[in-house]
Image (cartoon, rainbow, N blue to C red; front, side, top):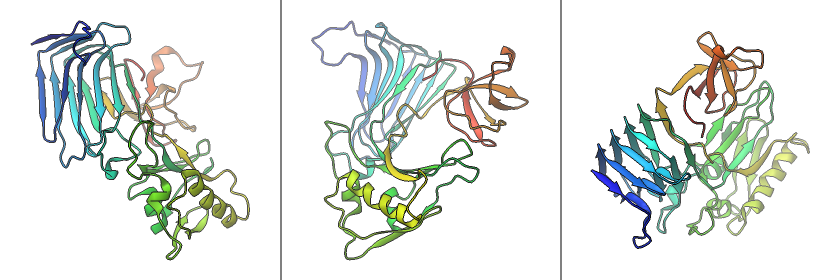
Length: 332
């Protein structure tokens, strides 16, 4: 099959092959050639699903003829569930873009801090140049860098503020530990807000206060009616109580808002990536150049020869932890 979109303004979609999926839908593309100035293949989910869809692309040629065109464009619309995409033995000319723009009617449960609702896996393809957007804030709690840097939360107050599965990241001497809420606490401009803000999520604790414990700050109690509070208004209360619990100085530890998933995409390129232990004494950060150290990796230095080059880090990892890195291709 060959699908060519020459950029006509009569048809409203600029995508050569564009599909809206439904729950359980299975798309299969084999030996397809799709070409468009802006987007050769595109698909999106919909709101409020209870089971995933899937996409399989095999032995295809996907071409965007514009220099800023997209070989594959994906849109997450608020299904609330992650769907797999497998792309194999395919030639891609153009970027791979994943946009998270939720439609009206997306349930509150879909409004997670990590909005990516497609998991893309590439194998035996041309290198993938990708760009992904997840423009929502999570509630964050940061520690400070140090040998024992950690963030541990417990108690009903933090179950509400951070959700059942917060994203907790280890710290080290050169990296502050962090915890991010499972859910988002705002929506991008133009989207309908179903009540994701911290004030609405917390509600009224004035009659029945709730408490939570932080490993470095003791117990904090929520005791106000936060329903009408803005995010900043809610943040000021636990920050003041954290300071009080720590004797008037937190040393930089604080609650804040953060966007931890911007361009940190669920995408993998089998055969171009590897996993190895960080053998350095320093933390490896996303984008660092790595050198081999036996079967492990470490930060590359100007004194290293090129034959030690292992690749470029795709995630942060403290010393002794495994890091994922790209051995060939493009850095997203």
